[in-house]
Length: 198
Image (cartoon, rainbow, N blue to C red; front, side):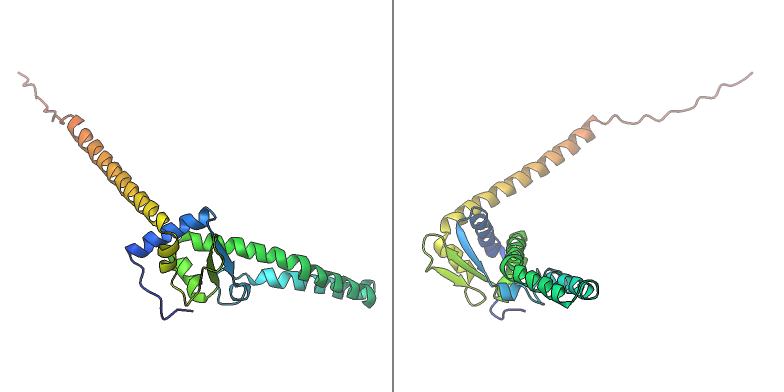
């Protein structure tokens, strides 16, 4: 699902995403997830077995118990498992889906944009729950700049230090290459001398 209002990713977007990554990692923002949009076909983090196994497993056991014990015992088992699924297993599956979604959006800006365009995320400030950004209509970039501008400066500093570290590593590699070239001893060709026999 592609949002028509989505923009091409540039360096400024990467800087804002780094700030957002820091905000999420430090738990400075609240993220609400749309469970129905995430847990369905078409979502990149959807796992059908999480929904099918809790239902199919008791059904197969129930059909087996019909022949072994009886219909009454099988119905009790199926009812009990359905009760567990509604009140316990579904919450457990939601927590797993939530953790998987968080890891997914923190892995890269492209994956974050993918879920944002799906309309499955809502960003809300910790200080004021009335300030939020809804996907896919809202612009998360403006939201980060407006309410978390201090993290933008930290992201810029990190980017500069990363570039410095890369340049230092490149210079070290070049210096090592030069040292190796300077320390190499020139190869001397050995000439064979023939003795003249008288």
